[in-house]
Length: 275
Image 1 (tube, rainbow, N blue to C red):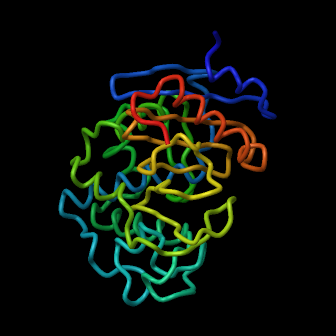
Image 2 (image 1 turned 120 degrees about the vertical axis):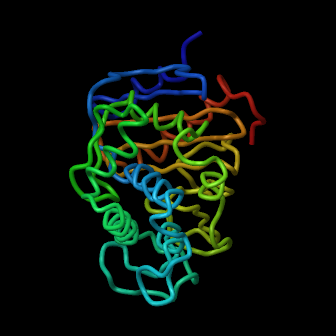
């Protein structure tokens, strides 16, 4: 009987690296473990950890004003500030709708770096990547989409999110619950969602349809996917995470392949209930 990861060989990509991990360690993998790939928006998970670390060190506060008038750090991380996707233009009052904004994440990174008195790439390397053993991951661009690194590092990040050691577990639990529940919005690549749930930097699966995770993923699943053909989901009820890096941009192929892979991974390795 083959591994559910064998299906990756049929994907329309030149190269892909996929890993399934539990808090205890690697469960299964496919593809090159050490080749760096672009993470694109999966970068936001690293930036979020840096912000959460700054919060627990007293450098910033979730409810301090930031961004557009009336918005806070919490609004920015939750894509609820009303900022445009990549500009400082304000498209909505804070807390009214979910507008996916790279710019909002960048503002949080800028504030965190200013309070720490060091450039954000250095802060990320020293405060997040080094402690977590992400030796080959680096930020060379926007804090919202500019990281690159190998599968081994992304799997290590997944294990941290399953069983946190760097960020206090209560703070991570708050970040991975829906912030400003019930807001409508557009999930990039999957269209408008009447309830576009998001945590603080983490997308929350809830009951979104269509979605890039599988139908077996619990509503508590959180993570992110990237335009570069990357994703990381963490299902706390199943006690599993799945990390994926490819050399082909996200498109219809991924919207079809990723949910199938996710369902097969959970059917084969999951310990929790299926949904």
